[in-house]
Length: 385
Image (tube, rainbow, N blue to C red; front, side, top):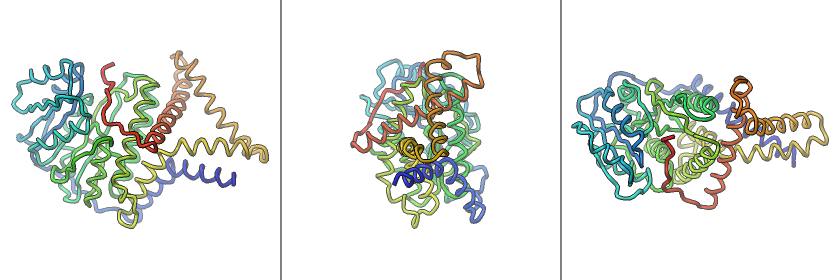
């Protein structure tokens, strides 16, 4: 029984890191999707920003929004204040640009409510969603729009780029780069299984109201695909942000919330896991969003099964020792290397291992919360420090 547990754990971990990307690329080589027609696409645009207590960042976001090329003169910038009680509303109201539309929710209801309010009020044919802490490249919106020249495209995700501030920045960049590579491969074979809430666009006609306690960007992705349209990735639409996690504690809280709400969204659209209806997308979604969420479980079963098997086979003992060394490096980084900046290469390698373990711990807590039925509707974003 234990060797089977070991083998299953290895297979599950490898399926996420290696087999799924390889399968996506092989599918592209054998049967690629119809090539997208990328040409300038003109449509009315609504840029939607939801913010809660963002007085330290909203000014820069508004300035950035005004500097963008929208590809049309018919556009609007909708800013939804989700029950802010700092100076956020005052700053937004002070912006007298004719394209600005301000919506206030009297109490904090959660980002999903702000997105719904913005989408309902929007007049544009294309809805572009972006976070208040994301600085968008000047040509990002035309880059997103050109994908809608293909009538089968219902949504487009932009590219997240991490800036220089924050802790564990190198480790988080590697994580984002890996996620970006997955998106590019998935776009070759159909639709991406992981949307990025920092910047994405959809056809307003396909918008579905977001329920509470789900990850809004993933839910919209799932809703678009469930209606028979593709959701693709656009590398030329860039959103620059600071590091998502400010410190280890923030990463655990953030990852736990994302995992809980994303699994709830998939449960609502569970029909998308049927490969007989949705083909390769179902496989990508299962591996990228379910196996990925179960990685900490498989890491634990791998460690325990290796411990038992190490008694009967030298190779298992070596493998168990390597795992032990990996987790020990986390302690070394936390207690020593995180305080030493001079040994850059070693510190960077150890920080990646630490971030991987930290993220999986937060993921495990998120899976437990999901199984317990816990709902996360609103939270206080940490974007100002």
